[in-house]
Length: 301
Image 1: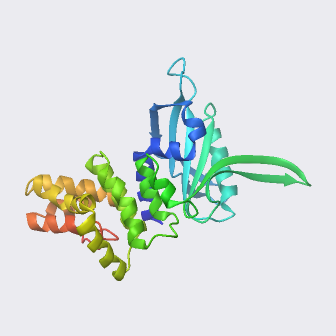
Image 2: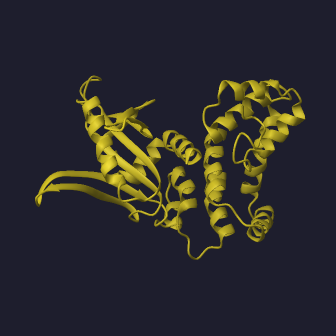
Image 3: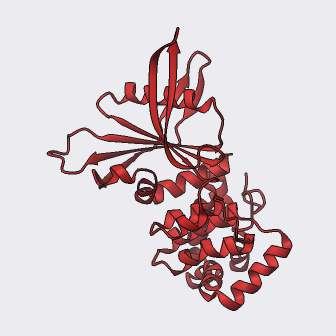
């Protein structure tokens, strides 16, 4: 789960404007997205057990047309859940209450993204508690169930984040190779910087793995009919070559590793610095997309 958490935290942080357009289209016009700032860590103790919980993503944004920079910030809290489970709503409410206590002047807009299961698409959900038949708690939040959403509809959207998320969505009329190509095609054609393009491509590679027959079909089609995708898939090793045969390679490789696995520990950076052979650095770059861990790359401490 840690790998999924890190990938989605990075995706949502990098494409936060896109995320708001996907899950809060009704609110986005009222927000000044130029003011977005992220809270690095929001950690709570789960009473009475004392277990520590770190929230996945908390962003502060000011309303559009604010009169001063000291005006109330709105907090957007996003939780990423691998699978839908009913007890989640109670936990989400506790997170909400603790955020409100910690930031008493800031209203909170809570969002949960379910990678598998949950209500289909973007819906408003409510958690309720009652005592002797009388309602005492009604907590509303926005839910986005990816696996029940339409891949084709999201690939047609203008937000690059939607193209990557479509890799987790249903595409009943497409073969897996067609699904993957449909997700990668707009990513390859869009005017994106290398880091953003790589991050989107990495999400598709992670959530649309192909079995060998489909993989062969995919490669044949890409090589013959999808030149933009073919060029994109070859471009990152080429970027390493273009940046030089020493420090430039290492810096680019470190950026790609951080995009894939999150912040690198000092021991991993030291191991990377110890690789002096330019061809070995290039081989590491070639293997990044397929590796499931830093250990597979020989970089874990």
